Amino acid sequence: MNFIVIGCGRVGADLAFRLFKNGHQVVVVDQAQEAFSRLDPDFRGRTTEGDLLSLGALQRSGIETADGVAVVTNSDTVNAVIGHAIRTHFPQVRQVVVRNYDPAMREMQEAFGLQLVSSTAWGAERLQELLIDPSFRAVFSAGNGEVELYELLIDSLWEGRPLKDLMSACGEAGVVVALTRAGRAELPSAAQVFRNGDILTVGASLEGIQALRTRLQSGPEA
Image (cartoon, rainbow, N blue to C red; front, side, top):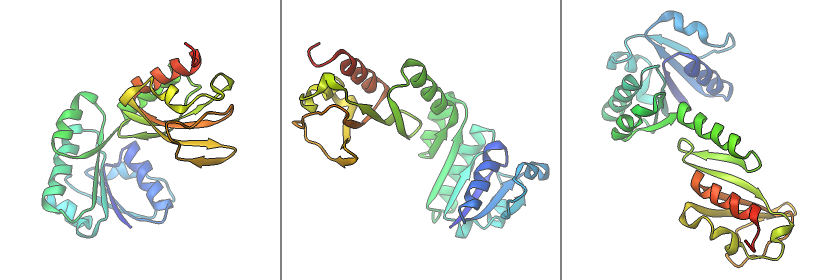
């Protein structure tokens, strides 16, 4: 696949090399030639120097045939403008993802209808989870950490109790994704009875997982 990375800071350089290592064709665009020194010495993609807000620079990067573009400069405003310009002038590009650094700027970027990744928001959310209780393992993060998939180990307190007794604690803030027993996963019903050692995979917000944590640890009779 053909990808363009706009901005060759730490994030852009690392992303470009990861894409290259996975066998993709990669073009990195930056307005400063010296920025390309951040790229791994083994990177064999193409680099293009030019004004990041120029349609000409985008065209020289081969955007007409790009499958996806990541806009990861150090300016949230510039990222939003470039992302919007690509969506407007090059609608054939299937995926445009922009970086968000300042959470206060997220609403502005989202107003453009752009797919964004906020390393700051995601990192803060993950740190909060680990500080509160690392026993609930997050295995996947959607969006910027607003909803995550967690694995919950069911202990003997819940042996013989139905799944619905546990999930009622979080209401609409959590949904069951799977129940794994003896290495085999299934889509359980609300009446599914727990056994000691079951692993329950749940999609939940932070509020939902906190409610589940309290309920799981206090036991079904609480």
